Image 1 (cartoon, one colour):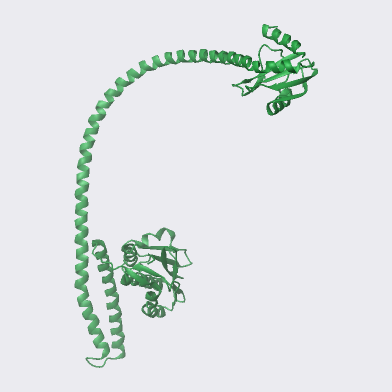
Image 2 (cartoon, helix red, strand yellow; image 1 turned 30 degrees about the horizontal axis):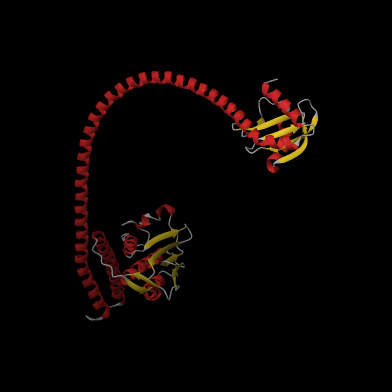
Length: 416
């Protein structure tokens, strides 16, 4: 029996108890463990849990506990000021003497905890020292290998620097060439736009003359005409108007590309503006046996935009919808207000647009159908121009479609 155990036994008898058992905190285990040097009466730490927990909660408690020799005994537990627990086992404890000793026990538990910590620290330091010694040997070997690698890398760096210098010169030449190519492309684009604009103006003059003379003939100014002649004149008028529309599209596209198109932004009562478009699209719809319907939805709401360009965008969407909707189908123009914008939607019951083509239809000179058997005209500029016009008015134009279920084009503009 150690000196500390003998002293604990003697102190227990002095206090009227059979044994003393001191539980101190173990930082490694984060729990209370029997202090070294006191009688090891604990056979199962779990059997004491309820007594210790009750003591830590209330400060003092009594109960029966299991001992190492499989017997049971009465026990009194006292919580010390440092969180340790002193347990007296058996006997009739002299409370007055114990009360005088309780303030002294934290000094003993501190010494015991210090011994435990010092022992653990010493073991850790020895293990760390062994680890550091091994690491130093490894590091020395690594240093030797690293020095050899550095010499090799230094040689490679010299070669890499020479290669980078050559690549830098090549990159500079490539950049200069790209800049020259970009400038040439911009010049070619300007020339193309100027040519398209000039040709559009030049073609409009004879076209207007054709339309004028055809109208004079149709009115009978130069004499009566036969029914067959009137049919031919109507075809001339239709072809003249169709060609004029194509030329207008080309001219508008050229102006957009050249950045010469002017916008006159103002507050526009959208439903009132769209109401009048029916007269322009209904004849085409009747000719193709397509039902047209306008559903106003924002009578008291205005948008910010260019009045003429709003009409141009919506009329183009309506014309396309009628053109691609089969006989017996429907085209609906309707409006809807949201907190920040007003949406104009053109919905048709046509064949629909494949999902992979919903963005490409807005590219210049793109049409879904170019077969000779299709009675669809145009050069594929209408949607490209319409989206550019929408962007110019700080709006947007998008398409939604499902094959076999028709398409919806949504033209949004900011609210006034």
